[in-house]
Image 1 (cartoon, one colour):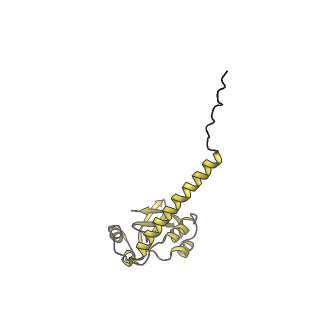
Image 2 (cartoon, helix red, strand yellow):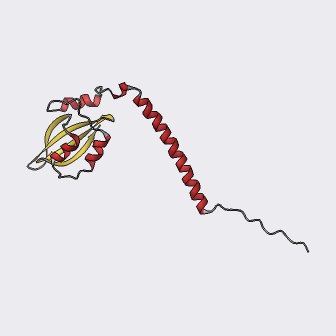
Length: 149
């Protein structure tokens, strides 16, 4: 009588080791992304012309719709935009002004709801010159925003 060798067990990776591999791979990809982002930031910082404000076609189009004087230096940073987006509607106009100061310009008023005239102000985005944030006010209350491209 011959005895057969016991069947060989195939080793399956444990769920814990699979999770560790997934985390390690994700960390490596994250580190590579950060290195590439830092390289892009260095090239941006080494080129002062990248910060120069040159009128884009979007800004020229915006300028033609302004009803007030244009404040060339008025631009929204990412930080200001994030702070603004956290403000609830119907907060005061003065609360918005604490975050973003004077607008690039004022646009013509609109009648969105019957009997209420809505004021509009435009703010070009410093990090995307082809996009403008338009803020809407009703009776000195923040009534919302939209992005104009």
